[in-house]
Amino acid sequence: MSMALSERSWCVVVPHHPQGARAARHRLAAELSAAVPAPLLADAVAVLAELVGNAVRHADPLPGGVIRVAWRLCPGVDNDTVEVRVTDGGANGDPRPRTVGPDSLDGRGLSIVAALADRWGVNRDGLGQSVWAQLS
Picture 1 (tube, rainbow, N blue to C red):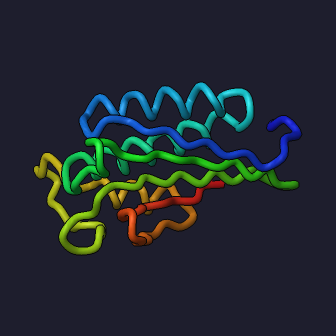
Picture 2 (picture 1 turned 90 degrees about the horizontal axis):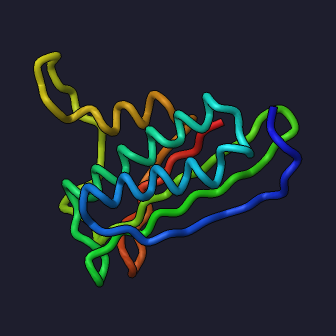
């Protein structure tokens, strides 16, 4: 059961490094642990980890060698929605799920995001590329 909250949002900057994913996961979990049901929090943490990991592995950093990580909580009558967004300096081509075999060591990140999220997408602006996902 979620607490009665109004819409809230957070934005943090983490290093364009695998440790950035750890910092983002811990911050999101700390901020939302009392506000959303545990299964939704677990899915949001997993999606955020995949998106930050993809940004570190496949995209350029923003100026300063960082990635911008944001999330928004939209409490609802029947369920809460969490939107996570990871902004980086962009990569060649659009992020898209890949088809990989059972022995592949990687390549499942966006398939995991698509399976856990209600919807996800990519936006570009003059500052970089954002990959976002909404979960409820």
